[in-house]
Amino acid sequence: MPLSQNIVANYASQIYLALIGIVMLPFYIRYMGVEAYGLVGFFAMLQAWFLLLDMGLTPTMARETARFQGGATDALSLRLLLRSLEAVFLAVAVLGGACLILGADLIAGRWLKVEHLPKGEVANAIALMVMVMALRWMSELYRSVIAGFERMVWLGVFGVAVGTVRFVLVIPLFVWVGSGITEFFLFQLCVSMVEALLLTSKAYALLPPRVAGAARWSWQPLRSVMGFSLTMAFASVVWVSVSQSDKLLLSGLLSLADYGWFSIASLAASGVLLLTSPIIAALIPRLSALHAQGDDDRLLLLYRKATQWVGLLAWPICAVLAWQAERVLWIWTGDARLAAQAAPILCLYALGNGAMALAAFPYYLQFAKGDLRLHLLGTGLFVLALLPCLIWGVDLYGAVGAGWAWLSVNVLYFALWIPVAHARHAPGLHLRWLLRDVAPVAVLAFASALASRWLPWPEDRTMAGLQLLAVSGAVLMIAAMGSPWLRLTLTNFRQHEQLEWQG
Image 1: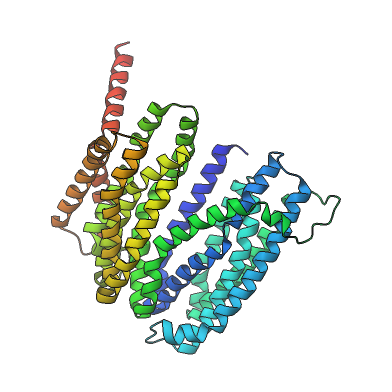
Image 2 (image 1 turned 60 degrees about the vertical axis):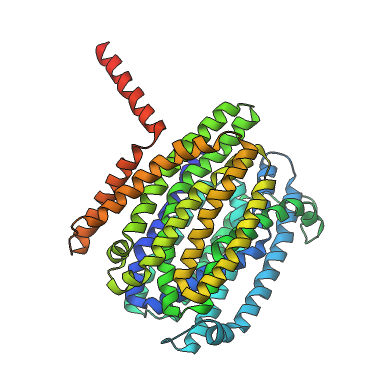
């Protein structure tokens, strides 16, 4: 399968799943209520922490499968590794799941601040969500095998189909059966069982035929790949600590209804990073290739162009979400009370995500050069600064305090650490990068989005939504005027058109 098709399939499915989740959220709120949706947010957070138990084993399985495809290992070794990992994953799923299920009553009664839902129903829902997590955990192992065989198109189509069932077909269940949290998670459990069965079948269908020798469990295949796995595990621990610590703290401090509002706002703010991820996925291997060729001039040129590309996507959406937070939430959910409650959180998290989208660029440069020591140090300092700020902010101001902590630490990282990384890996670049590639687009985006606050806005949600789209488009076009690369491209295009017309 051509690489381009795999990339397109992968990102088309990711974008579809993200968008369908956003589109369906107002229906969940309508049928389930905000407090019950808080449990859905708690489930998403708990699943992210549960995946830390992976210890880098699923990317290792994908890597070893790809190595088999390239002829670097044999069929028996691949089957031995899969059999060994199956035993590890099953043991973790059973033990981890059992611990969480036994603690379901404690979580429902002591950790979560439930106000209106019956505690017994919440405990049952937690037990069901743990079983869903265990099945998804097992599914990831077989998904990594399929990815290692480069069946990205199949995975993309399969992901779209399962996501549609999971997110959309739950609505008929709400209408005709019931919209309680028990029904919701029982439905998710059924979907996860089918998903796990189909992924397992596909993975085994792709494996090479049985060869001489017994593919039994052994420590030896695991020892041979633990170095790579632990490196990936450390990166996962850092990322989950950065992205999920606030959600973990807030789940135990806020009422479940308030946590539902927080989950909605943080989901909306994630759109800033969602729009930029396809560019980053294509950028990193290209930067790595240019460094391998010794072409540092083209590497830095692409680095600066990509900064402007990401800025053109991140800054306008960040600015609109920040300055129009309450209106965005009202148009999205139709709940004016929810919009007013969650707007400050959305504003702060959108701004923090905008800073993060650009602050990540020195990492791409370090990854291309194969030297991540400075990045690991910077990320460690980021976590050390974020956690006490979160604890202090959440304790005093709740979810809004978490938003201020997220924004403040991201801005400090952007202002203080990026110059250090640039000085080490691209001396003399930082001021040009900041003043020419970042600041013009950001200033124009934020100024134009701020000006839109004084426009007359219709009271009808549909008309307000259309106006919001028009405003977003206008902010994008105004921000684009700040991109030197885009201005040069348009100038060259016009000159080319004039030469063709004259010829």
